[in-house]
Amino acid sequence: MENLAADVLKGDSLGNFPHNLEYQSGFGNDFSSEAIAGALPRGQNSPLVCPFGLYAEQISGTSFTSPRKLNQRSWLYRIKPSVTHQPFSPREPSHKKLVSEFDRSNTVANPTQLRWKPVDVPDSPTDFIDGLYTICGAGSSFLRHGYAIHMYTANKSMDNCAFCNADGDFLVVPQQGRLWITTECGRLQVSPGEMAVLPQGFRFVVDLPDGPSRGYVAEVFGTHFQLPDLGPIGANGLAASRDFLTPTAWFEEVPRPGFTIVQKFGGELFNARQDFSPFNVVAWHGNYVPYKYDLSKFCPYNTVLVDHGDPSINTVLTAPTDKPGMALLDFVIFLPDGYEAKADGFLPGGASLHSCMTPHGPDTKTYEDTIAGGNEAGPHKITDTMAFMFESCLMPRTCLWALESPFRDHDYYQCWIGLKSHFSHEETKDLQNGVDETTFERQSHRG
Image (cartoon, rainbow, N blue to C red; front, side, top):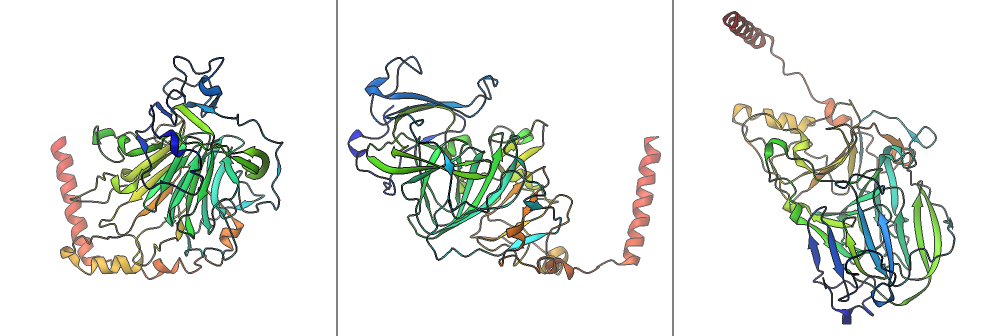
């Protein structure tokens, strides 16, 4: 189908997004898009001669022999093939703060609750690539199992280069500043309050229309994000498939002397030069695509009578493992509501890490303020916020620069130290006697 008029393609360059970008709707669909009518081959993926003299190229997100219901791939029809570049060489200066294989040589095990204050955007020119740094993770991109949690701070758009992540999928959550992301499938505008997924192997450019930008990135190795099953919720709720947006075909046909492909491979960065833009895809079809989602469209289900629901009820996307119910990584959000955690803990741009089997929960002030109301304490809605969580079944190892960061809050543990005992022995003794008698009576009647 034709999504963009051909007369706007030439000269509509990177970093100059229109206000009315068009998208396709759906999650996991088989999409098709052409910037020029007739650019998609009819009836076959790779004809001997493609329309308009284009090259046919497949990008695979899964192995060829993956079950049909799991198989992900797309066909791209481009002006020049992506293989037309110089050999890769290590990027200089090398990036010192990216990790994709977590072991004792580069990270440490630390079960202590950790928290970081918002990181300042650097003064020196820094784009998305140079501003990306790893906080923690587990596993290995080489072994195709694991994850990494990154943050980024940037103040300039990427210039005459594109990024390609050969290690895994990026889930990007901007906290400050919009991101204009150009991909081989088209363009995405991603604002704070939205998220985007950039699948493994796609080349992309990040422009910063608002200047300084800051945010979070979750990376998964060896799997892809999917919508969680809804179970007893039924057929509807949480994130709806229709609200996920995929770009429409867009291309540029202009010389790009010295254009650089920056490839992340095993956590290391490599450069390859070419003389054309990688965003020369005139048409494409398939189900392996970049996409975005507006988090305000999430339909939450909450406990309204008793108890506290598990955070899994707020899962937007999940990257599964082979074990049912065990996620390599869940992306969970907390919309404005009565959620109680830490009165002064979550700052925009900050982060915290609570590792496996390390206790955490509401801080002293939050707890004391709540119980002061006694049985009359009611819910208090929290507004103008969007908290989220990356959760994994794997135990994370933390990067040294994150532990040594000047933005680390070394007094984080203090927020729980003031929690005191409210235990009353006499009241509890009477209550316990009543429970024992009731339990005994129930057991005797069963007999």
